[in-house]
Amino acid sequence: MTRTRTQALLATLALRPLQCDGATGTQLQVLGLQSGECCERWVTDHPDRVRHVHQRYLDAGADLLTTNTFGGTTLALAAHGLDTRAAGINRAAARLAREVAGERAWVLGDMGPFGGILEPYGETEPATAAAAFLAQAAALIEGGADALLVETMSDPAESALAIAAAREAGAELVIATFAFQRTPAGFRTMMGADAATAIRAALDAGATIAGANCGTQLSLDDYAKLTAELTAAAAGAPVIVQPNAGSPERDPATGRITYGTAPGAFADAAARYIALGARIVGGCCGTTPAHIVASACKNKKHAG
Image (cartoon, rainbow, N blue to C red; front, side):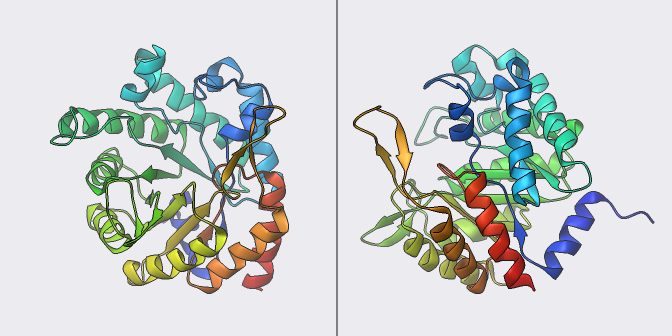
């Protein structure tokens, strides 16, 4: 029987840690994306620039390329008047990443939060959110995604809906990550979930790999402590860790948001996370191909 690409991904992960790519949005901003503009629309309006970002991360040594579909549900795209184009945008995004990845990397179909809050705390019915996630997942798989990444979640219930939708759509592998902040009570998501609660909810819902990404006020040292908690909570399941390149700061001269962590420091931190049990490392906001080059080099040395 021929092994699927997803099975090959898991087999490779069992042998060595994998390197994910870095930020997409901040890289597209360098290429002209304006504040408040729909990032996902660039998949169809500026495919050459999105392809360029994927190519730079591939050349940097990324094993996993993430589609430009973070806000790709019909619910999130409705804010830009693009809800009727959601399926086409997600398919096109997956195809772009798939073309660049070729046989050198795997493609993760990105599924971020839908942009609201579920009942009873918010106004969105779970069935409505589930339908939006299912439509996005199906389009990403149709476009060629090897696995689906449910990321930057704060509510374990929303994450579980997205994971279940991904599985229903036929995803062989689902990865789930949460955004944590440091609080007096320890690391918590915006909805108050600790690492153990969030990770167990994701794994119980059908994720194979779980962990954390983003966390705007978390330092790289904070992420080391969080990685230890995630690894303990995962109880043997693979853990993914994708911090920002430091905390965002506004440049007073230009007004632009900057991230101060240098590639070398980021790579040293990624190596620590692997030593603490992480099996996939990558970057979130503010990370660049330079950060991934440095991290990938450290990653390979660790694997060796």
